Amino acid sequence: MYDKRFPIFRLPKPEPDTILAVFLFYISKLLNEHRIRTAVLYQTTYNILPRFSGNVRFVDIYVIYLKRFEAWMLEHEYSTTTVGIYTRCLRAAFNEAIFQGIIKRENCYPFGRRLYQPLSSWNIKKALTLEDVIKIYYYQPENERERKAKDFWLFSYLANGINPTDIMHLKYRNIDGDYLVFERANTVNSTRLDPRPITVFISEDMQRIINYWENKDKRPENYIFPWIEHNATPLRQVELCELFVQAINDWMRKIGKKLGIEKSVSTYVARHTFSTIMKRSGVSTEYIQESLGHTSIKTTESYLDSFGKTIKKEYASRLTAFKI
Image (tube, rainbow, N blue to C red; front, side):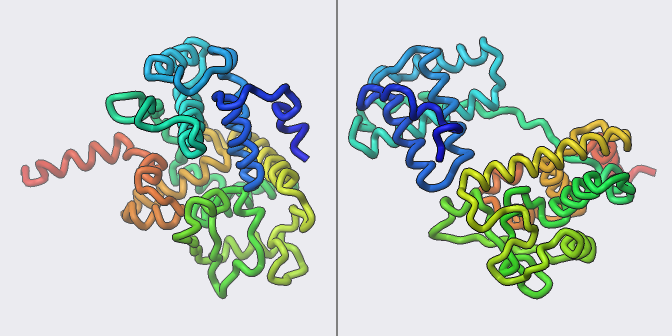
């Protein structure tokens, strides 16, 4: 079922125990776990590596090699975020090779402190202001597509910044009285031994959105929003989610333009906006971490926008508030 999306499986198989052979195995492993989006990232890295240096063995991948690979990508105008992602994929392949016994960690592992560490990008903050959210909230859609985009952008914002994939996978069994209780799709594997369900109070606005768009067949295993077929393959589910996100983002871009909102108004921004507005209202970072379903507080901190200049000016004045 993956032939079209993953053409690397139609290519001649790479020589055993090489970096590309391990990548191919790892991508197959991800697909067996239905982690399709992650597999796409590894396929992209798989395609880039030969362009840089051809297929190599793990003993040839040392610190200087990684620094040259990083420099080569930057010279070809890859963003620091992309460079970081691809080198982390390479590190995961290295760890897989160690697990398989192809190499020994103590002999040539090039990652870590004082060795090579993948780039971390400067996270450009994406949150909207509360004033922008107010504009979206009171905007009157001009057609059904605008209504759908606005409703589900707000649903994401109101439901702890829930992402579109999790929205589409919500089932009636996830409703527990006045609350939604669910696990994030992209953390199910990493939190298997320590499940971290997210609990969201269903506000009046969220209930209104559910009532308008919901599946009328409310059996527990049915999806609340009827856009995924029960017999859909994992790949088809990903494709449907991608179409859902694209439609929302396209129409929200038009709405944002009408409202004079300069920042992007995507589903990703809705998640950042939830976390930042919660922070600015005085909510603790730990609570926001739990609400977002993050396993690491560092991930949560990367979502939080910094305080604006006006607030900083106000806080600075408090340092000498004793002056007459």
